[in-house]
Length: 117
Length: 115
Image (cartoon, rainbow over all chains, first blue to last red; front, side):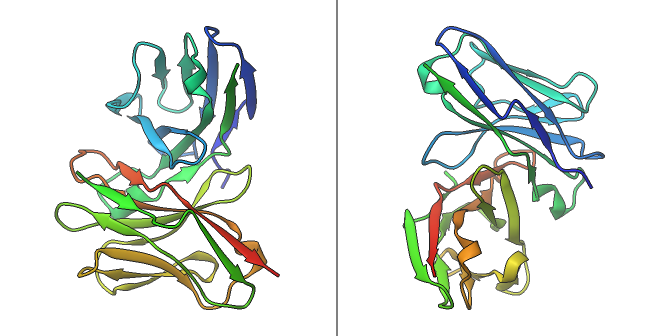
């Protein structure tokens, strides 16, 4: 099966500019996650969708970050305006949906490396 | 609060030797524990999980992990290291306070296998 696709792979912007990232999860995976991974740290969950509904966005800086998954498949994550501290790798992941333990097996895309100057 | 700790930023092992990457956890209730690996310029890959049952869990690429409840540890192991095992390894735990399938990652351990 095809993996999780993300684009772009790299992005360099100046502070106060805006940027958007795109993710296409594995076919049939209703749950989609966006993570922020700062250099030297583990991934931190920003937002989790189940189909097109938000399940958890408790760590999303809502004053500048937004995400949507309108048709329950693809998703976009936007930052507006960007700050220097937003420099990180943004990872998208998807997983099976249901009550079984496989929901915790997340499949990750290659990530988008964002540099804010 | 729930958390995982990976006490070593880096582990260096000679090829062919056994390797151990350490992880300790702090959770309420029964822990669900995971190991993920991240190769350069690639996303994380699921290696293995402990939910219940046998304390020794086997996963991908010949890795295994041992759950030790008394020591609250979940160390990753492999009997004979390969150069291709060089990567960044993350331990993770289920967030029991989340209603969703949320997991919390440790800070990672860089494993370097020298030929």
